[in-house]
Length: 358
Ligand code: ATP
Image (cartoon, rainbow, N blue to C red):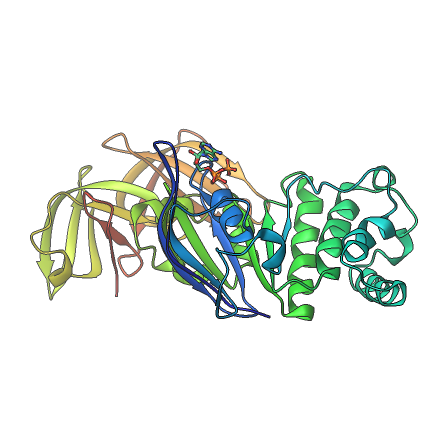
């Protein structure tokens, strides 16, 4: 097990700044997920850690030693890609043994390692098959097994689940989480899927345009997003953003009036927000409730089984989504009256910085 430290790491490709001044510490044994939209620099960051790219500036330390100066093979890092890249003409056993044979590990030891890891990953019965005789999920486990036999200090996963169908993705997510619990290996997982990030990570690093916007536990990032970008990216459905027309102070807290006239007594401390220009209110679907003074008209209904998402238009034309448990008896075109939980709203300034209710 090893901890990873990225210190002011940047990577340029010509005039593209793929990774900008990234500093983050991943603890030994941690399962960290780097999440962000396509092109935000996640894969580049992983490739820098693996040694497939060289940083333009900054340092990478693994297990206390500087690793960015070492060739990829000497770093003790194993990378599992989206495409698995198994050798098609080799059996599962041979795929797993290949790297060990290359570095001169004895037959007995190879056998022992593969048997134990294959049992752990529930692929022991597949060792004689070739990759084309496996399901995508099984191939994925073989790719992980092949990485595990080398006993790396650090596992890197680059969107390894994106080729799988939804049900298999959910199952493999659980398997990976179990595997992490069993092995306590240090793992970094890259994905653009925020559900994957929320469900698997011990800590999430949210990336945007080459930078890390926020690092925190899934619930910290969900409940206390540092920026409007993080608030919008994490959570399904995304947070509602509504323009604030005027603000007032009441008992040291911000009272806001939306452009459609609704007023919200928030518990955002006024001292933090005082004098800051135009504000936007952020509120998650579960903090908008039926009953209250804000009138809206329902225009889309999504029935998810356990809950219903209701999209409604406010008087000023902005759309808001809220949810009701179960199969809500609501129809498109219906007029609804809504209220906002002022203790759970966020305010964002023009730069996107967040101010939270306390
Ligand atoms: P995705 O989820 O689509 O894989 P990502 O977050 O992994 O995206 P990267 O692949 O790291 O993003 O790319 C970050 C930026 O760097 C992008 O703008 C990309 O076009 C650019 N980039 C990546 N590799 C190179 C390269 N070899 N040469 C030039 N530009 C590159």
